[in-house]
Amino acid sequence: FPSHDRCRLYREWKYPALHRAGFKCQRCGSSGDLHVHHNDVRMASIIKICQPEGLVDREATWEETVLWVERVVDWHLENEPSSEVLCEGCHAEEHPSLNFSSRE
Image 1 (tube, rainbow, N blue to C red):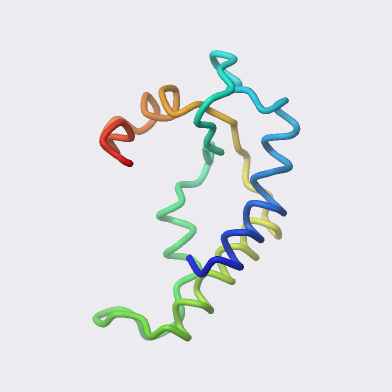
Image 2: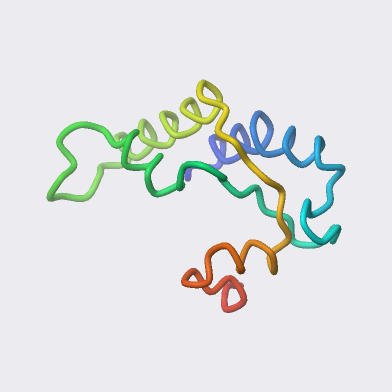
């Protein structure tokens, strides 16, 4: 994600979710390593929905990537997907195949 869009996604979608949850995991109450988990639509699906036309068999150019990221952020703001604030451990339970514990 280009940095300005990461900031926009955080500022306009993630931060409000964290604030509503009191900056605590909604399952265990932890306040460390918080993630905003999509409840009813996977991020991979959102990315696919927002994919610019014509990117089936090739990599996106920088301009297409910027457009794509803007569309992902806009999609979150327009659709307000159901979310839950989870600590890294609880989020890992939701997505065991993502192996959060091996990330740095």
